[in-house]
Image (cartoon, rainbow, N blue to C red; front, side, top):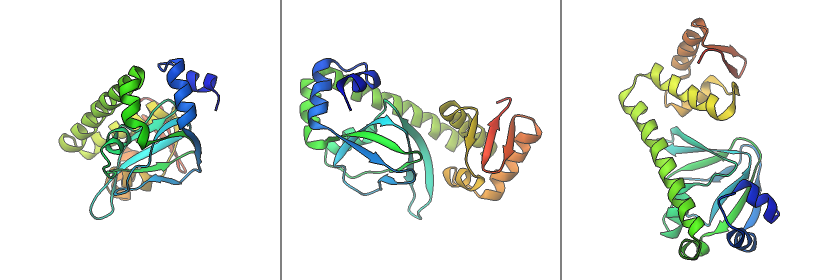
Length: 209
């Protein structure tokens, strides 16, 4: 990964910071479906996403999973930056849903990056602010809305992130929303009858959503 490529992905970083990240970081690749982080693990690195898409979940005591958000090109996990610096374990699970390439920045450099590079400091602040706002929106829909509203909110996030056609199963959606496949299938058929989406095998297309 050249400095020019890094700069195109993270234009907010100056030349000095890019050069430093090149020196201390290591490009790492993950296959589709591979687990990047499990709940309870200690962070060894903070990952800057260079290519691909990572899905983050919150796991319950019984092993159920609830979808939080995606990490994509130019993004980073806010929790890894904070928890790594404080030597705390992960409270989330992260899975690659496409092949992923990331720059792994060892946690031992976190303090120095925050102190010596203002662009990194602001990047961490903005990443945390953005994710916090997104999580508040998720919590609002989880707590205060019915399942059909939760599903609509979920699909909108998927379409906005992945495009007008998404490859996903009813079972995956049910897992992400901590519901049953039967309930999700019924609600999806209702949306299809309203001509808001089109459903085919393992695929949902946005129509009037």
